[in-house]
Image 1 (cartoon, helix red, strand yellow):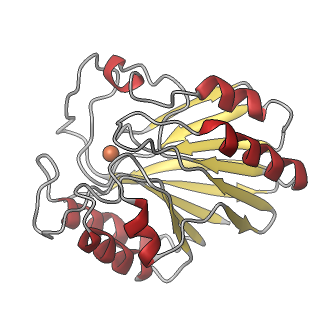
Image 2: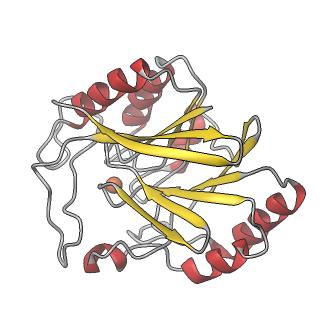
Length: 240
Ligand SMILES: [Fe+2]
């Protein structure tokens, strides 16, 4: 089973618009051309699909993802308008990956850059894990750990402690995937592996106290391969 994580596309209604310095739509197309070569079984898009919350941005994103020819799923980020997303495609909660399960969380907090899951969603997450013991991946937009950048850590997941507490009884959770940080990241929290994928749009400079672009870094994505109860993962980048 090969899962590919795409994140932070930041498309605008104008297909030629720049996100910050790079052409977001052309960067996404370059990423998807490489993704297609890798023949993923499933693609998960972890938020900030749009930058301007326009229906047109979601329509073009959906068209491009659908051209991959595999099942794909999306969750909202802080720059997204979930109502427009749902008009085009459902925002799923659970994805069946055969021997594995992928649980999708909505960490968007209306009008804020930071995120939160909330007690109701955490209770729902616990209930899902209670009823299905298959190895699990969890995906959300906001980082549930510090990534070592002061400005970014201040707009991460507000209720990260409650999130990790929720997972304590469920050893089947193997990894958590997130976006938002616009750079590759990996660490672990206890026995759970924690990964971010690079944005398909412009990259941010890792381990920076203040916001800064990383103009030397290229757009990319993360590949996750599931084998038995283990996973392997790597990041790929594209030239544009
Ligand atoms: Fe973003």
